[in-house]
Picture (cartoon, one colour):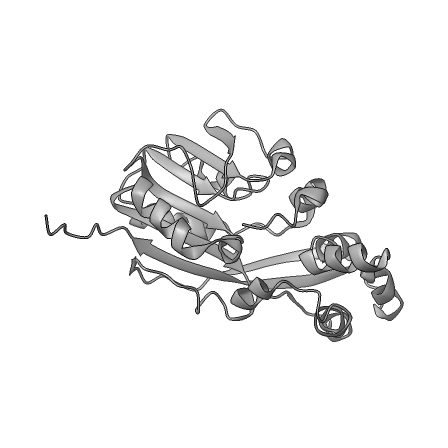
Length: 248
C-alpha cells in the first residue's frame, strides 16, 4: 500500500469531507454482530469516530505513524500502525471491516485473504469512498476540473482510476449486499475548498517534481466567492464473508 498522505496529515484531518450519518445508520441495520470492528487504513479516524455508537471495540490501523498521531481520540478506539495486507489480529476476530477512501491503494489479493482470515463467518466488509467533487458555481467547477484534468495530468497515481470508475471495477470476492445511494453535501468557503484541493495526492507529486504548488497556478482563474455547495457521490461496496467449504 502506498503512503501519499503522511506529509499532510493535519490538513487531511481538517479538510477531507466526512461521510453522512445516513451511511452509518444503514450499516447499523445490516450488521451481523456489534462486538468488534477493524477500521482499516483509518487515516485520521474519520470513519472510526462514526463507529463509536455501533461497536463495543474499534481497532483502527494505518501504515502512517503521522496520520495516527493526528487521529481523533476516543476510549473505544485503539490505533495500531499496521499495513492492510498483513496484521497480527487473530482469526475470525471481527464482526465488520471498514475502509474509507483507501482500498484502491491496496494489494487486492493479499488484503482480501487477510480480510477473510480475520472476519467472523457472516461478517461484513464495508468499502467506502467518495467520487470527484462537484460545486454549484460553474466557474469554480471549471477551475477544479482544469486542475484535475489539465494541470495535474500525468501526476495522478494509476490507482486513481478506481475512483473515477466509482469503485465498480475493483475486484470484490464477497457475497455482495445491495445498498442505497448516498451523497456528501456541505457548504465550504474558499479556504476550505483550497485546503481540500491541497490534500490531493497528485498535488504532492507535482510539488515534489517542480517545487511549486500547482494550486498557485490555479488561483488566478478561480473567481471570488463566499461559499459554494459541494457534493461528492459516496462510493460503496458491501460484502458478506461466506467461508468456502473444505474438501478435506
